[in-house]
Length: 289
Image (cartoon, rainbow, N blue to C red; front, top):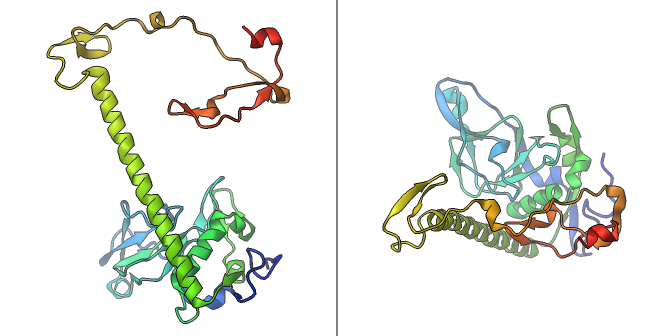
C-alpha cells in the first residue's frame, strides 16, 4: 500500500479540508470490454488512444465493435462518469490519464485497458474528483502506482483506490472545478487559433515563394524547383552565402563554463526560445575564427 507524507497524496492540505480514499468516493467502477469483430449490435468503443493529456476525449477515431443485443443495450456512459487509462502508456507516458464524460453517451463503451469510475455526487463534485485524478497523472505521482511489463505500463488499481485525496468543502470544490475547466477551455481555444495560424502561414509561404504577391505576376516559367514568375531569378543556393562553416562537436565533459554555444535544441521555427545558452570550454583560437 502506498504511503503518504501528509494527509493526502499531494501532502498536507488546509485544516478545513477533508481527506478520503479514492475508492470510498466512488459508487461503482467497471472494467471495459473490447467486444468482437462482428455480432448482433454495433457499439462505439473508446480506447486509451482517444484520451488526451488534458481530460478531453478525442472522438475522431472511435472503434466500432460488436456485442450481443442484451449486452449492448446496457452500454451507455453518463454525464459525470470518468474514464481511467488503466494500461498503456509508454517510456515517457505514464498511465492514469483521465477522460471526462461531459454528456450522456448512448451506445458507447470502453476497451478492457480502460476503467469506468462513477463518482458519488453525494460525497463530492464528480468533476472536481476528475481534476484531482488527472493531477495524479500530470504531477507524476502515478509513477508510484504502476508497474511496467515488456510492452506497456499497468496501473496497480487496488493501490490506486487506496490513495487519500483532498476534499475541500463542496462550494470550494465547485469553484475549483469551474476555474480549471475555464482555464483548460481557454488553453484549448488558444491552441486551435495557433494551429489555424500555422496553417495560414504555410499556405502563404507556398503562395509567396512560388507565385509571389497575388495578382502581380502574369507569366510563369518552368525551373528546376517548379514554376515561378518569369522575371524572378533562380540562383544556386550556394551563391547566396558569403561563407558556410560547420559547427563544433563538443563532448559533454567540456560543458559547464566558457564560451556560449548554440545547439539545435536552442532554436525552433527560426527563433531562439532561450537566451540561457550552455557554455563550453574551447580553444580561444577556435572561438575567434
